[in-house]
Image (cartoon, rainbow, N blue to C red; front, side, top):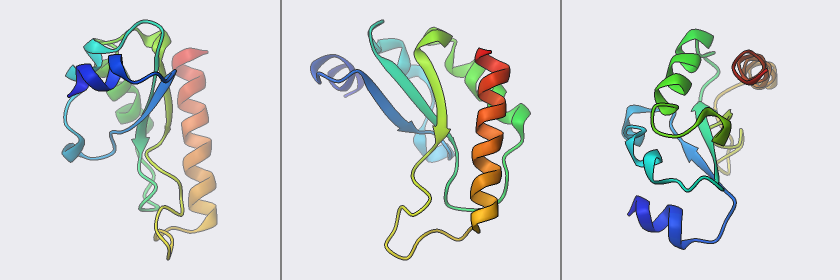
Length: 110
């Protein structure tokens, strides 16, 4: 399925949820063409618990074993109101997650 997804669909990038083990490994990223971008959704938007920056950086490094770092980006795995009733986190927790994502992105990509 990954080969079809990455090669037959005419888009520039993919937002991929990787915030839980259920998402699977990064191995399918080896099939992404060089002209496409993968946005790694490594921070969950479902809870206010802040992920450890070291854990996020380690996961980016693991993904970069299958696709060049230059083709990767970082984001939350979904919007903060991904259900009708919203998710269980405060506005301050949302901002803290976004701040952490920006800090990790600056550390990884400069």
